[in-house]
Every structure is written in C-alpha cells, then in structure tokens.
Length: 180
Image (cartoon, rainbow, N blue to C red; front, side):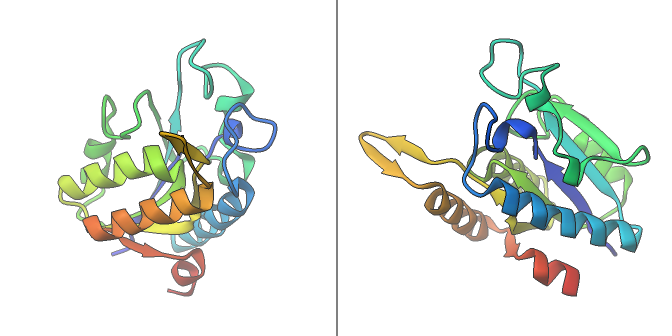
C-alpha cells in the first residue's frame, strides 16, 4: 500500500529573506518537490501541514507572506491542507482522523524544521502506532545555540534524524523514495 506523504511547514519564512531562515531550505524544498511529484504520479495521498502563529509570534504569522507554503510543494485543490498552531501536527488538528480514514498506510514525512515540528510530529506518529519514514534531505533545520555552544544547522539536522531513527523512524533520501 502506498504511503501517505505528510509535508510539514515548508513555508516562506524558513527561506532566505524570511523571518527565520534555516540552513539549506532550498535544497530541502527541491527534494520535497521530487517526492511530492512522485507521490502524485503514484496517485497516492498527500497531506500538507501549515503552521500559523498569531500576530506578533515572530514568524509564520497568520496572514503574512512568510506563512505561505513554498510554491514547490503547494497543495492542489484535491489535496488535504491542515492548519496547526503547535509543533506537533496532531495537536489540535484532525490529522490522526484523516490518516486513519485512509487506511493502515505508512507515513512518509518531509518538512521543516527537523529539530522542531518534524521531530514532534514524527515522535507522536510513532507513539500512535504509525510506521514512519522521514525523507531526510527533504527536511531542514536552523543553527542553534545553548549555554554558549553554537551548533550549525547541518549538525542539528543530522542529530535529529539520528535521534528519530533511534526512536523507530526509518530515514531515507528523496532519491531512494523516487527509485522505490
């Protein structure tokens, strides 16, 4: 059975010129676009998730250009769009109901940020019993700092993918998906 592709928060504020640019967002969006095109050719389901923060939230603010989904992965009229307000795409949304209605399908996840919304959603999906595969090169993360230590975005991204792999997700590349 074909997986459900869940694309999380590939939104304009995460790109250069946005309010919270990530490391490598264009490469991630290009990889997500390849997977989305493949999924559409298969006639397999796609669910798009868009985060909306309230006005004054800093980024991904409701009714701003930065909250818009990047054109490369924009939903078509027949694809589901879920709006969320928390990092975990299941919180306060009908994502679980929509996924269950599609049958017992594995999930294929791409999105932003690897270290926040992708992580929170994938961990929740695993806890809910879903078989989850993350398309690693179709995700991106920011540079982070804590306690005087700066961690570059590529290292953040890699560390979170490694942690998700250790938590039960499978991590693949977009090339592996489309070759599949």
